[in-house]
Image (cartoon, rainbow, N blue to C red):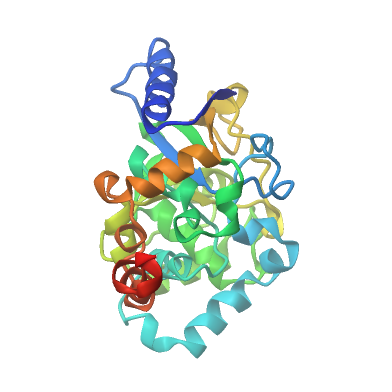
Length: 309
């Protein structure tokens, strides 16, 4: 559902607030949370001015070759860049760091902070990238609080460790390989074939979960970032993901308790306004992407002759 096409920051905030207020008429605000995802253009099809019709998916699941080689991508990244992954990090923390560097993972970035999503829907247009010519979008999600996990939960540990194992080793009626990896990470992880815990894991692995990370990553802290963590089917087959209202209360649906309730169109005119007001909105590039490697762009904009022309 499109909630509007906006040309000003005020219109954007009004449209999102109106969408949430209408939704709250039917849902107890003590049982749900609202999240946002900013996208700087429509990637499906590329640069279409119309809102995306497909559900948002992690980069890993947009490419079948990525998905089939998830374990190789995970292990090769750590092998080649061990200095970027401190010892003692959990697999989920490793995945969030990989996501930071745009390595394909089963994580989808979301945030409870509307201004952050607005910045994401505009970036990299703030750098005069060609995406500034196209519409951006903000997806608005309702999330049942029961679908929210912390990074230390058994469910998060299990779904994160899917990244370590081969597709053929993920058989839903026997998750022994996955349980082995989880126990290697945390000695207290319990799994026993045929037990209720085992049955719960077989159910939970076929879901998408909202996960709150530890704020030990500069980007997570800067963006107030959280994640949708995607499980899988047999042999790591992708889930049938809808984020639809019809599946919100469907206990058999992968997106049970997660619904996209609207999508806001961010026009090029609004992108320009966000660019002009980025410091006041606290969505400047160096604020959302506080990397020393990118700081030269900030210096160039602030101090170079080109910036003064």
